Structure formats: C-alpha cells, structure tokens
Image (cartoon, rainbow, N blue to C red):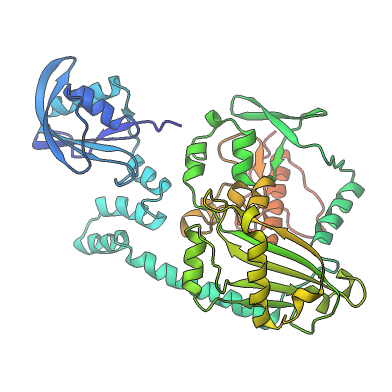
Length: 472
C-alpha cells in the first residue's frame, strides 16, 4: 500500500535567512525531482544544490537532502529542502509540492509516523513535542534524556524485574490444571453457550466478509450468508486480515505493514504416548548451556542442533485420566524459528526429534525412546498450514512496541462493528489473556447494544472507565 506523502515547513514561518521544507512518504523523492526538474537520484544523507521551479519558472536555488527509508526520522523516504527563508518562496514551494501529489502534514504527523514505524517508542514520541515546547533549560535536558533512551532503559529494567516476579510466582505457588486437559475448558464453554441458545456451526469456514464502505455487514461461507449487528473475528490476526479484509480497507494494518511487523517464535512439538509412568515433575524447563546462542538461532532462522532449550509436561503425574492405566502422555515444546524458506521441516523433523529426545535425558527421561507407543510431531510448517501466519504460534511478538494498547484493538479501529479476540489482539497471547480478550470484546458489544447481562455478580464494564451510551 502506498504511504501518503506529507509536506510542511519545519522552520518558523516568516522572513529569515533559511527555510526548511520537509517531505515524507513514498513520493518524496519523485516530488523533489519534479520540483527541481532534475531526475538524477537523490542519495542517502547527501546534500545537493538544485534549482527550484514553480510551474517551470525558476523561483530559488536550494539544498536538497534525502534521508531514505528506513534510515530516516519517520522510517519513510524523507527529503528536506533548505531554501531562502522568504515567506512567499516557502509558501510557493509547499503549494507546488501539493500540486505534485503531497498533502499538508497534520500537527505532529512526522513524529506519529516515526512511532508507528518503530523509529521511536511512545515516551520518545511524546518527548519530541515536550522538547519543542520546553520553557526552561532543565525541561530541555529532561526531554533530551528521554529521547536518548535513558528513561526507556529504566522501563526495560522494571519490565525484566516484573517478568522475574511472574516466573517466581508460578514456581512458588503453581498454576491450575484443568482436569482432562486445557481442551476441556473450551469444550465446557461451548456446551454452556449451546445451553444458552447459541448455534455453533462447525466445519463451515468463513470464505468472505461483506462490507458497506468501512462497515462489516455480513459473512459468507460455503453454505450460507450470515448477517448480524456485531461481528467477532477469532482467527489468527495477520491471516484473518490478509484473507478476509481487503487491503484497501486497512491503513494501519495493511499487508505491507503486517509483513514488516515482528512475530513470535514458532514451536517444534512432540505429543508422546508412552507405556510407563514417570515420577518426574509435572512441568520441567531445560535451558540450553548456550542459552544466548540458542535464542539467537531462533531469531535468525537457524536450528539449534546441539543442546536446544525445551519444555516438558508430564501431565499424568497430576491427572492420570490423560492416559490409559500405567501409561503417560508427554508433551514437549521446543522454541524454534518461525516459517522460513531456508528451513525444510519435512526433511529434518525426524532427525530433530532424535535431538530433542536425547536432550530430554538431562531431565530424567533416560529410556523414553524405548517406551513410545504413539507419537505426533508438529513443526512450524504444520502450524503455518493451519492458518497461523508464519507459524508464529504466539502471534505478534511481545516487544514494547507491540504490547498492550499497541496491539490491534479489541474493537478493531479500522472497521465499524468488527471486534477481535485471540492472541493477536489486546491483552496478548497465552490462554488466560486470550480468554480475557474475549471478555473485553463481550463487554464492548454488550455496551454497544445496551445489554445488561447477568454475569453472576461480575461487573459487565471496566471499573476505571465511564460507560458510553449504547451504539445502535
């Protein structure tokens, strides 16, 4: 999708020795070439003197400096035109750039684009405005510190501390296990929904979403067309956007921008049925001796063949119903690269399975290989074939630039009456947070429709927010 090119004067308007006009967007270099009647390519961070023509009439001579994507302030192609600071010259140049295809930038739009393109975090973006409007040298120093990343580093330290606390709490106090496996939770939720009158249509995938402008008005399957007042999408976010929502209806989450987003790792899975019991912990995590190298392999689309990190669940220690008498169900998860053309899992999955089984000996599973009676292997390619974009099982990566309110919103911000649930939206991936995304969506929909459901005493709105009027 083309990024609209914006223009504005970066220096104060008036009469001065110099005026700086900034262009940013896909057409920035093309507009600059037409403005100067010079088709030679502008080079990154190289200033060149060029004439400035307005409707083929020479009006000034200026310095053109290009900052090409992604190495610019906004992350887009940027051209700065340093001309004489005459009010009329600057206005004429801006008017001509608009005629050539740009539009006037909104206040703060350059910094907004820098934030959306990952060039600045939210604190840094806010600091730009505060720095420009600072009323003392001390305020200038503080905002400069924020821009340089000093406060961001402290926030990262706090984040690491919080994550450490989370791990400790899980280790010290444990977590609940759903008898019969996590699948029983959604099965029971489905049964409750049917008891309340919900019709659940299985094996009927949605083939197309129907729109009236930016409003979703229906769904088509191979069997029927469905209409409703509100629609909820629970498919993998990027897969759903690319497969069901036309690119032209999406700006913030266009196909081009989805491709540039960061995605989580994938997983190599073993689901093993074994003909013996293991007196080993329900949960075990093995961290590679070369942990940082292992993490680097995951992020750089490589395979750790020697000593990979892994997680093993021995569920029958807690819940014997998960396997026949005297048997065990062993679940193994290995963090690996998401789908990449350099890795053909069909060719290597059985060899990698042997590496994983060998590594599990370090957790006490010495004779596991000899006792396997049933086995399922799931690779990143398998996840990808199951409509998980890039096989990224945890969806959009959980960096600071893609967490919480920076994820796609539960009330999808680009279309009317569409709500999102799942790991790709707020609050994030992981089963408890995925369920919470469903509850957030339900609260929003009930509020829009003016419905006050009985949730057994549970509040149907958010305690810190004023409830809006229903949207009919």
